Length: 101
Image 1: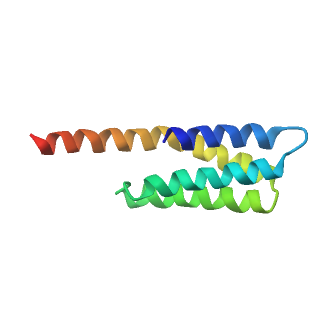
Image 2: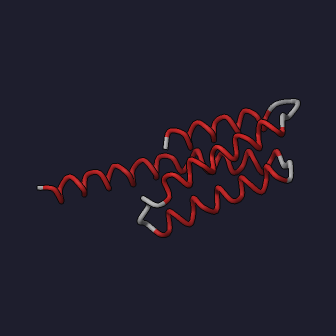
């Protein structure tokens, strides 16, 4: 989750620069996608999983077409989803701890 947050913030900064470094944005978008792939299998809530997959897909597509506004929008959505994701994992951890008792 921390890596998704980091890459979202980095993408927001990179896409807001006066001269946009598209190779850096594309590399960071790939890094974000790798982070998403690493955690998606743990997300049991189908709605949350679809939402995050769509955000990631939009981010990838915006980066591939050199769309700075689209990258900023997707990065903002990803940043806003971090609290929901953290809450999901906190509840999952609590449920696992209760199940062990």
